[in-house]
Image 1 (cartoon, chains in turn red, orange):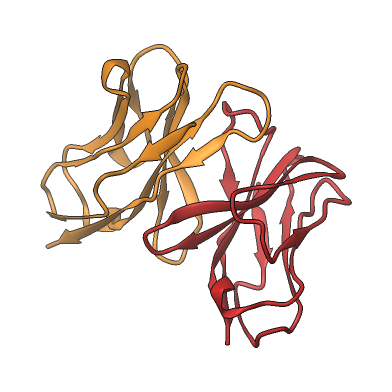
Image 2 (cartoon, chains in turn brown, green; image 1 turned 135 degrees about the vertical axis):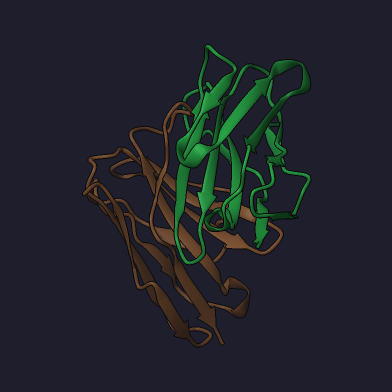
Length: 114
Length: 114
């Protein structure tokens, strides 16, 4: 089944404790992206990747890091999480980053930072 | 700059009633247009898309949307709402240029009352 898999789905952590949210897709998509969803703000893009070793900032990259060493994986790293990073996170992928492509989303990762 | 506006934050309809969710976009050329639905606890799923051609497009679950260039709108409609349609709905725009070109509205939350 074609899918985007995120882990963990739920996580409670404390301020400053590094964490990684993994994202993997099995569709050989070139484009991958991370979004955070907050009430009233919709989806805001954190980082995206057009292909392996090609990443760039989205609208809200502060406090996050990403890497794209393999085509299928695009982990989101929070080096020193803070409470304002409490949010629902989505990973998405598509064939390419061009606007005529449909995004396939993961099920989401709900992160709480205490 | 490109933008997507969903003026209705929350809508409540009775089961069996008709539904229209509004979406307006700002973009210099004809964009690629999408509606995604997010059911509770789920990721976003594509409902329908418009790339070109017939301005009335049909999607899954009985939804349709109409592209109106003169109004820069892409409103989502359903003639008879079912309780299972309760969800968050996102309008999105894909631009025609290369690169990272996906823009989302802030979403409309739909409540269906029996």
